[in-house]
Image (cartoon, rainbow, N blue to C red; front, side, top):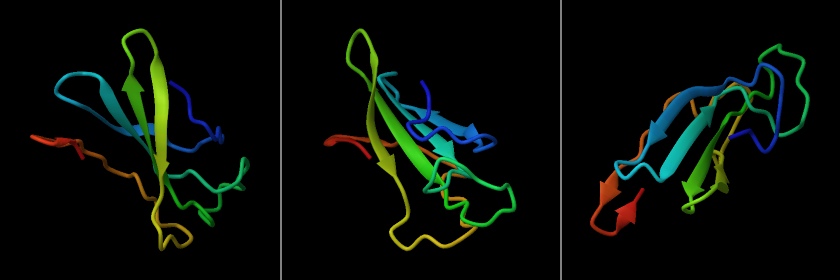
Length: 90
């Protein structure tokens, strides 16, 4: 698995969660920016969480989640968790 927006020193994988069935993974990228470069000053490090789903033979990138009200330095994705419910995962 790789970030869909590779950024040096993004913190990709600093936080991770896997579903009970082992077919869904959430990866936190706390220093991911909205652009493919960063000056490592802490500015614009909004963060993101990437969701992958295993389709039986490959890991497929399902979603890139970000905060709707993100501000510089939020570091969204510092921690992640997956919860299985009777209706699926969330």
